Length: 215
View 1 (tube, rainbow, N blue to C red):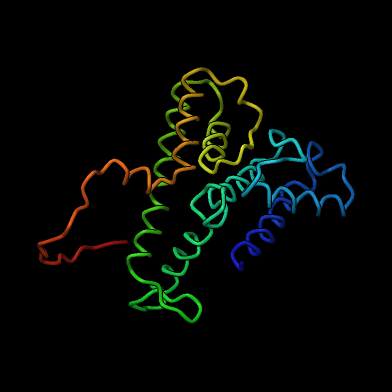
View 2 (cartoon, helix red, strand yellow):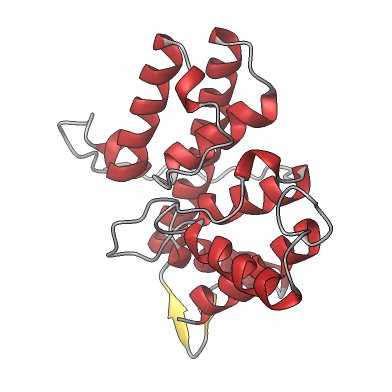
């Protein structure tokens, strides 16, 4: 609940800040309508994918804010996509606990098991890799701009449905790539990858630990 409320507020603030002076989106509206539309777009970017302003006319900062919201997505148990709010919060909690020098990840008055932290980190990293790979693939098969391809990829991964207006102009290869991304985004990147393994790996040997220089 806290994560959802925080994302709604922060998302609304970012969209309002970046688009309030944009004559193609929120610029012509009254202050009240600007606030309402900013809130609606913040909520819509993580759920239904409806839009009350022309997405393709948004500033680059505005588009990037929408992409961040689409990437995080909805909460677990819902029909929305993205990495999920809980995954995002667990990753932030793990980073904060590490910076504080703690051996365990604390969240509120509870300790988060390391296996859940690893799962959250895996979902985040694999999702980023997928979006990078799909964006490169789209750039290779069409002549659209990088930001258009990145936005379309993130929207597909989050199963949001927002677009900068390029969807009708995608070629056959681009549509197949986007369809694949929607499928993976809906199933879940971790579930999709684990479904390829027929047997579960059981660690029977504990190897000696190695000290590495990280960071």
